[in-house]
Amino acid sequence: MKFFIDTANIDQIKEAQDLGILDGVTTNPSLMAKEGITGEENIKNHYIKICEIVDGDVSAEVISTDFEGIVKEGEALAELHDQIVVKVPMIKEGIKAIKYFSEKGIRTNCTLVFSVGQALLAAKAGATYVSPFIGRLDDISTDGLNLIEEIRLVYDNYMFETQILAASIRHTMHIIDCAKIGADVMTGPLSSIEGLLKHPLTDSGLEKFLADYNKNN
Image (cartoon, rainbow, N blue to C red; front, side, top):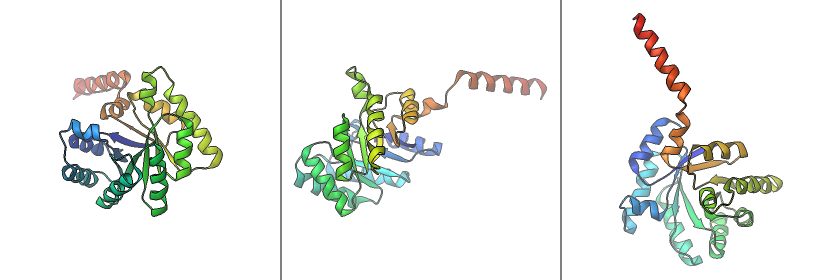
C-alpha cells in the first residue's frame, strides 16, 4: 500500500518524508488556501516545491469544470514537473478530459468519487488513480469502506489498472481497514499516519527496558 499525505503544508510533508515511508502527496484548493497560498503563480511554485521534497506522485487539482478549461489547466500543471498527476473532478466534462489526458500520456487522479459507477467510468476513461472519499461517506452514515471493497471487486473482475486511492482518511483505523480491503493507496493527514506508530505496550515496554538498563549501568 502506498502512503500519500493530504496537505499543502511543507513542514508536514518534510516530516512525513523523513519517516521514510512517504510515496506521494495530494493537495486541493482548500488545502492551498489553508496555508495562505493564493494566486496562480504562487500555487504553481508551491507544487514545484512539493515535488522537490518527495520522490513520488503529487496530485495537483484543476479548478475549471468545462472540458476546454480542464484540459488547458491540466496540461499546464503536467508541464510543471514529471511527478505531477492532474486531479480532475468526477463530472461529465472531467471524464472526457481524463480520456483526453490518458491518450496524451498525462496521468490523472479522478477525485470526489462516491459510487462504484463513478469509479467504473473513471477506470474506463483511463484514470491513473480514482479517489473515493470514505470519510465524507461516513459523515452521512454511509459505509465508506464498503465502497472501497466494491470498487476493488469491480476492478479485479476486469483487471483495470486504475489504482484505488482511499481519500478523506480521518484516522488510523481507516488506514488499517483500507489495507485489509486492498486499497492501492491511502491519503490522509500526518496524524493518521503517525497513529500507526502508537501502542501502549510499546511505550510501557520501552519504559521498562530503559529503567532496567539504568539500574545496572
